[in-house]
Length: 449
Image (cartoon, rainbow, N blue to C red):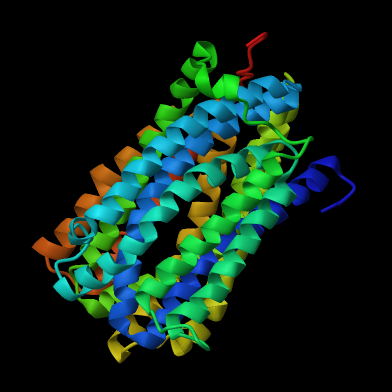
C-alpha cells in the first residue's frame, strides 16, 4: 500500500479512528463479561442477555445514523453545510423519541424484557437489576450518537473517535471500581456495571455538547429543530426506512440466536457470550472499513464524481477482504488463549473452543457484506437490497433452521450454533452480483434545500 496514494491516505485517516471507536465500544462489553465472570457464570450470562436490549436499541441507532451518513457525506462533499445541519435536526428528533421508548421499558418493565430471552428466573431477576440502572443511558446516547456520527462524516472523525474512546475507557475503569467495590466504594456487581455505563455516557454527552459549541462545528440550530424541511425529510425517510428494515430483519434475527441459545442451558449461554464478545472485538476493523468506505464513496458521489466513486468502491472491497482474512486468522491464533483464560465450566470451555472456529470464518463474510451493504451501497442510497437480502437470509433460512435444529430435532448445542452462523457466508454470492450492477452510483443531493 502506498501511503502517498490519496485513496489510502484518506482511507487510513478514516479507518483508524473509526475502528478504534468501534473497538472501545466492544471492549466495554468484554470488560463487563470478564469482570462479571469473576463474580459468577450466572452474572455473566444475565448481563449478556440483558445486553440484547442494548443491541436492539443499537439497531435503531444504526439505521438513523446510517441515513444521516448518506446525506451528511454527500452534502458535506458538496460543501453545503446548511443542509448537513438540517439533516442533523431531523435525525436528532427521531433518535430522542426512540430512546425515550427504550428508557421507559428498561426502567419500568425490565423483567418483561428479560423474559423474551430466557425462562431462567434467576437470570431474569439479575438482568432486570442491570436494566433498571441502565435505562437512563438510552436517552444520553440518543443525542451523543447522532452528533458523533455527523462529526465523523464532516471531517472530524478523529475528534469523534477520541470522545467515544475516552468515554469507553472511563466505562471500563468504573466497571472495575463499581463491580468489585474498590476502596471505599460498595461492591455493586451487576448494578455497578450498569452504573458505570450511565456515568460514562453522561461524560460523553457533556463533551459532545462542548464540541457542538465550537465555532467550526456543525451546529444544532433552533430554527431547524422547530421547523420541518419537507424535501430533506422525505429524502431521509425514503432511504432510512429500508436501512431500518434491514437492521431489524438482521438484528432481530440475530437476537433470536440468543433466544435459542438462552434455552439450551447456562453452559451454552456463557460460551456464546464469550464467543460474541470475541467476534465483536474482531469485527471492529470491519466496521471501520465499512464506515470509511461509505464516507469516501459518499463524498465523491456528492461531488458528481461517479467514476472515481466506482473506483473507490472496488478498492475498498479488496481492502475489506484482506481485513476479514486477518481478523479471522487472529481469532484462530488466539482461541487457545481465550478458551484457557475464560472462567468457564469444562462443558462451556469445550463449547467455546468450537464456537471460536466458527467465528473465524464468520468474520470474513461479515467484513465483506458489511462493507458493501452498509458502506458502499448505502453511500449511494441503495438501501433496499440489504433489507431484502437480510430478511430472506435470516427469516426464511437461518432462524427457522435454528428453531428446528434446537427444539424439533434436538441436535447438539454445537451443531445448532454452527447452523445459525451460516448467514454471512450464504449472502456473499448475492451481494457480489448486486454490487456489479452498480445501482449504488447515485448523487442524491439537491440544489437549494
